[in-house]
Amino acid sequence: MMGMRWLAVLLLGGLALAQPLRLEQGWVRRVPGDITAAYLVLYNPGDRPIRIVGASTPIATRVEFHQTTHAGHGDHQDVSAMRRVEALVVPARGRLEILPGRYHLMLYGLREKNPRPLAEGQKVPITFRLEGGATLTLTLTVEAR
Ligand SMILES: [Cu+2]
Image (cartoon, rainbow, N blue to C red):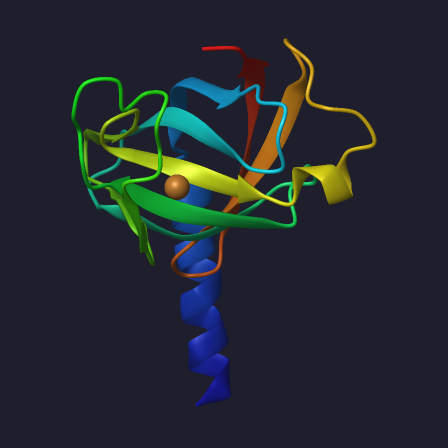
C-alpha cells in the first residue's frame, strides 16, 4: 500500500507545518576551534509531542544531539561530559530546553565549512528534520556566551 504510506507522510508533514515549533531563544557559541555547540528553546503549541530526528547547517559538516551528563559548576564552558542522543522531543504544549547543563547541538567541521571563524552576530540557519518527514529551518545568532 505505497499510496497510503505516502498519504500518511504528507499528512504528518502538513500537521507539523500547521503547528510550527516556536523558537523562543537560540544561539551558537562563538569559538575559535573546529567544533562548537548551539543552544535553543523550542515551544510546541500543538497537542502532540514533536520528535526531532536530525539537524543540519551549512556551517558544519555534522550536527549531533548531545545530552550533558555532568551538570557541575561551570559546565557552560565544558561540554566534554556528554552523550549523544538519537532524537529530541518537544512535548505537547511544552518546551524543549536545549540549554547548558541539559542538552546542546554539537556542530562539527567548522573549519572545513567556513573560510573564516564564526563572527559575533552572524546568522546561522539550522534545519531540523522531524519525525514524519517535515523539516523546519530556524535561524540562530552567533554569540560569545
Ligand atoms: Cu557535545
